[in-house]
Image 1 (tube, helix red, strand yellow):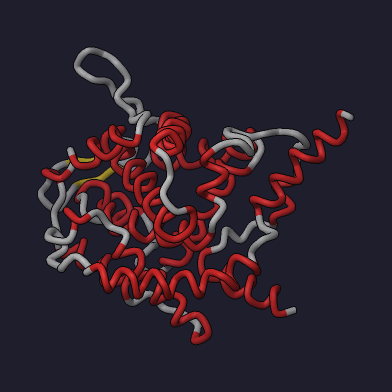
Image 2 (image 1 turned 45 degrees about the vertical axis):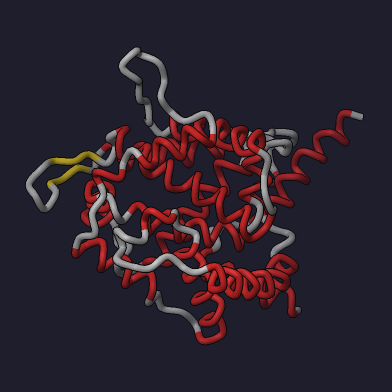
Length: 300
């Protein structure tokens, strides 16, 4: 009873809203990655993924063209929680769903992106499907998720594990239409952790802290919440800001958190994560595992 109550309250904040039973079929279908992947490992922790997701949103808001796409064509200012839930479902479907579920989610996003375009405040045109913008969004997500997982769940990951995750997630980027080439014609989508860090830093010259950016930051910091989730939400949002790369804070006109501030917040996150992980231990990750195990049992 208590477990279900906690799970329902947490999922109401940013859960996908889809029943986990959808992930039980097709039997033995590993999807795009499978149970041995780093994607399954890292995306399986709700707490660190929420924190990483907040970081990614903050970073994405620094790019005027990436922000324009959601500013002009999304209801996120009126329904931030709805956007979080749609993003959560996309990650769940592409990570833990069978191949058909994953590709359906990807193709739906591609179809929506293909129709969205507009003008920036400075008069320059933009297209949401622009591979350069898609790559920025991709980089902010994968680096934020990795850093958050290391800080709040898995501890220090080996370079090989990080590289594996980056390479796996490149499948999603390419499937969404993020095809970029170097001058020599070679694919330039990051396949290693070092390359991902180098590529995200290459966007710094394009970033700005505009009035729109400030509005998004204020919206994130003051996101509405039920009374029983207020403290949890505030901790998650604060941890999202702490999860940012150090070079972002001057752009946001903020001081980087001190080591003591990080320690105190990380300790608080670890404390609240215990009951949340206990309550959410039968979600899409577990159901996807059952899908694979059911198939293996049927082969015996």
